[in-house]
Amino acid sequence: MTSPTMTDAMTGPEMIALTKAHTIYEWSAQSKVDPIPVAGALGSWFWTPEGKRYLDFNSQLMCVNIGHGDARVIKAIQEQAATLAYANPFMATEPRARLGRKLAEIAPGDIDTFFFTNGGAEANENAVKLARQFTGRHKILARYRSYHGATGGAITLTGDPRRWAAEPGIAGVVHVADPYHGVQRGWDNVALALANLEEVIQLEGPQTIAAFFLEPVTGTNGILVPPDGYLQGIRELCTKYGIMMVADEVMSGFGRTGEWFAINHWGVVPDLLTMAKGLTSAYVPLGAVGMRRAIADHFKERVFYGGLTYNSHPLACAAALATLAVYEEDDLIAKAKRTGEVMKRLLGDLEARHEIVGATRSIGLFGIVELVRDRRTKEPLAPFNGTSEPMQKLGRFFREQGLYTFVRWNTFFTNPPLTISEDELRHGFAIIDRGLREIA
Ligand SMILES: Cc1ncc(COP(=O)(O)O)c(C=O)c1O
Image (cartoon, rainbow, N blue to C red; front, side, top):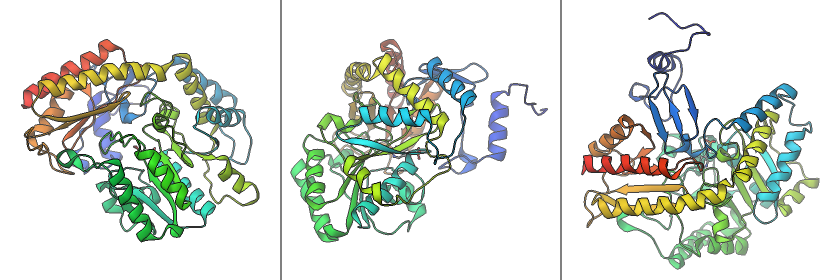
């Protein structure tokens, strides 16, 4: 095999061999990774150099909400690169100015001020700083069934097993149980879940707790749509004890659930709101932490101790502005709600047709299927943090059939771009239906 020059397009096997030789794949033992080589993408589809097409049922990493290859966003990035690719964060730029104003328009309540980062983890890191500096307290509460990012603080906040290798992590983080206890035990009622949380607050000392971080609808840890009253109750407890409520909407924001932000479904205004992914639909990396007016005012006369070379990067801000315009021009938030109703029915059909479907959950185009060995006992088809032969077989089947989605433990996800057509959605569910028959 001769090595390709910069002008030759690589083949899929060449991409795989070279990326594996010289780069590290995340969260994996390197000999076990089996990447799909990607040459291009448009709408709900991407393809390999050899032309095998995949329906993207996970919007890559739950982030390409507006679909692939939108010409309006590409043009905005090209124009911004030609005008001003970079200015340091002490400068004022037009895309930064416009993006701050636009986000103030769409964020809930009086959240009207933003600090821009490179992605979701850094948004959470800076939310920790804001909460600690604002309250003068140090402890942070977060839940076990959560992912908040891979940087030092964010991975400590993370409750799922990705945290274990990073322990002990930063000081002062306390994990609390979720209202959901897995497919076998199911959900606590709201009163019990809130009583458990209040007990932890009392035991830790409310005057020591700066913030409670939570994904309003939990993402990778199960598309957990909370029962009505839960988020309102958390808001009340946080207000009662002077604790900042931090909504991590890195995955659930920007139309994924059929609202701009998931928390809007429950009419709750958090103190801090973190975002990334759908903010630019991943065309360029960008994250942000939004804060309520009182928090922004606090830093008028006090120093905010935080900074990043790429804070408010002009290219990323321009990409975000163009992406937000696409959501509005194409009415994608309302479309996600409508297509989400179709997806809910298709998930219900799977449950009716396949004994191994133990539960399905969705809100908008944020969906998951939990597989079980036995409907009656609801024993998961793979153990917590593990896999099994049938789950692996299902993953292989999806891949062979050209359906890309995340298969994790005993679950798989249905998180297509918000632009997906009903025909494409049905095509994806037809593959899922056949896959479930294969492993029954
Ligand atoms: C809820 C949530 N928070 C934070 C993050 C971290 O974002 P990033 O990978 O951009 O740092 C993620 C990533 O998946 C996420 O789902």
